[in-house]
Length: 105
Image (cartoon, rainbow, N blue to C red; front, side, top):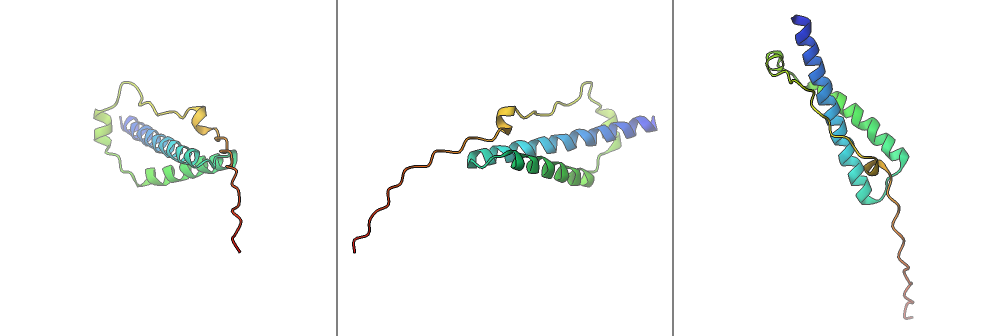
């Protein structure tokens, strides 16, 4: 019984950690996509940073053992997945042809 509660708490923390990680990755890749500065190197940094931050945040979270034991879900909570389209780096916008204005001197 005691090991069962521990494993439920541990699995709940893992689920929370994964959800935090996925939401950070999704938000940051979306933001970099809007700015037009996406790259594989940047995406790797985003994933690594999201993993580290999720780990730090889940260490601070305290989970009530009784609440986990009573509300043990029949099926696991699904984590939002990032589509490959969101992870791919967007193409850079074409530069507009700016014509320099000659000075009147």
